Image 1 (tube, rainbow, N blue to C red):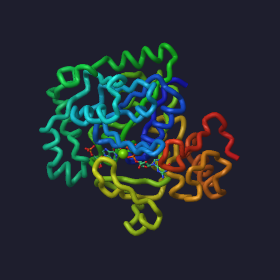
Image 2: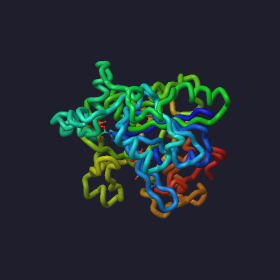
Image 3: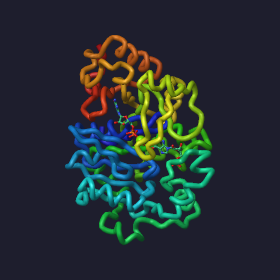
Length: 338
Ligand code: GTP
Ligand code: IMP
Ligand code: MG
């Protein structure tokens, strides 16, 4: 396994950041590269006693030996990027593509419009207006920004050369399948496609070079912003079930519903997923928290996982049992779930 993509199967915030950071530490990839829209994403990574929240930097930064890259399809807000580079002290090992589009103040301003901010419930991070300007072919690129010049490189060449040398590359998607501009709940979606095929294009790798597509589902569903959420729970049900969460970027309360098998099946199809990661099993079954061995799960939790796998026909290989990146059951080497 050399090239693996990680994508979200629902409406974003499935816990991709935690899964990617675990894989980055455990599998020791040479490269972790980010695709996706831009700083509208917010990954939370908990390692040892520290909690990191990143909007631009790939979650794989957690492995200090890994080179971290941002592909040309990703929009960059230079202020956010430079601040995160500084905070995480990763000047030496981050590179961005010269063709990344740049988010400017005017895009942030346009993202506060009545339509985007209130009707769609955008994150207000300027990504929609910037992608719109990219389509008009007038957006500024990273290669024209003096403040970014020391980080600019040719990301597709770096990734493809690493794969030629059989090195391990992790490709990080952001948002989720049903926020896709093509496949999501239009118009309540983000400003481009978010499925695995587009994540490939974002970083400059052809589909035939991908070995695995890991789709991440939370063990229930959450959604921030507007748009349909079938069987949406009321705020008191959300509280009672322990599903209450707030957005990493906007701090908004996330809406919630139980796991939807039909949506999950379709997301697997749209992404040609080869493996499933389920996060937050500890929220459904609190006594599973921090468990790292499948047989230590209680019978109800085991049965939840087995039933999901039987209905989805794709192996569940990673199970999140807590916010820390090591709160995980890794079944990739031994799929026997007994
Ligand atoms: P986007 O890229 O914005 O879509 O976000 P994301 O998929 O990286 O998810 P995000 O970090 O925004 O939200 C997931 C939340 O769940 C974070 O607060 C994580 O710390 C937390 N989390 C992830 N996995 C687990 C888990 O297995 N158990 C628990 N309790 N929390 C988890
Ligand atoms: P935009 O991407 O900021 O234009 O927002 C469009 C829609 O996508 C809104 O409903 C946002 O809440 C949602 N969205 C965008 N990025 C994320 C994300 O990373 N996690 C969850 N929702 C997101
Ligand atoms: Mg998030």
